[in-house]
Amino acid sequence: MNPTLLFAQQLMACPSVTPEDADCQTLIATRLAPLGFVCETIASGPEAFRVTNLWAKRPSALINSAGAATELIVFAGHTDVVPTGPLEQWGSHPFKPSLRDGRLYGRGASDMKTSLAAFVVAVEAFVTARPDTPLSIGFLLTSDEEGPALDGTVVVCDALQQRGEKLDYCIVGEPTAVERTGDMIKNGRRGTMSGRLCVKGVQGHIAYPHLARNPIHLAAPALAELVGIEWDKGNDFFQPTSWQVSNIHAGTGASNVIPGVVVIDFNFRFSTESTPEGLQTRLQAVLDKHELAYELTWTVGGLPFLTPPGTLVDAVCEAIRSETGITTALSTTGGTSDARFIAKICPQVIELGPPNATIHKIDEYVNVADVEPLTNIYRRVLENLHARLTP
Image (cartoon, rainbow, N blue to C red; front, side, top):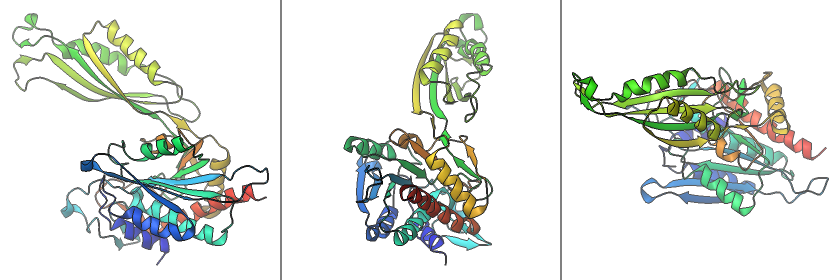
């Protein structure tokens, strides 16, 4: 059996629902240690939600031709998976990986244990062939990506920054492909900022509206104006900033009561053309214009980041083209990932993984035909970066 496929099944058999790692990182560290990796577990979070993080690094004693320290490429990802949902709806048990009709089924097949297995197998092949490479190689893994993401990658990045550890390149194994491995990578992501708006009115009997002030009615004109705003035009890499209402809460449950407050949850997905501060100022100006009595709280979930074409993007695109013949598409669409934390300490970050059509779904799967190319792409990226340091 293909070694990546075999190792992916071993990882998928671990029921690592957030924040549990279920020994996935131990399996990975066991494979990395014989290659010269120094493996460190960094636990974080309260006892009831204990997160396991792995930082593993294979240092190189070599220096490049200019006498500078070697470059470090990090493979990053998460060992945790989302809950399975109703077991009876699965065609096979989600933590008993099943091969059927050219597909590997199980929770984490696409998001993202196949990528983790491919990381390891690719590094094994590369280090075996080039044990004296000037590249340093690292692994940054967490069991808290699918959850709150408070004690995972962000904690490790903070620790590395405090130690003065310099990351040059990072590949995150998120599932990025659309139809087949390599057809799309993420070279950036939009920022995310959520808000909770509480508009205040006066509760009263619905038959006597003159004695009350309906906060839903008061808020409606402001919401209509906000929906129509062009926050920015985006740019060559990013879509225009989007503002969306996700929830509206009001009322006592009775049909004859005008509510006293309405609570509106919303979210910005914003490009590098906007800033959190600028978006907040513009939104609050609309609320003030409509003379609303309100309370507003903000949560910035992540800032936008971009890795333009350059050393890492070029190495990845060439690896994909050599392995598959595909000219990959660069994209910044989709949700957020832990790349947003890594981008704060690493100048070049991309996301590259298998197709994402079934992530988080019942009967999640990865096509077997996508597995070996993914491994080979990761290995070719290492070879391309190695060649750059050893002309």
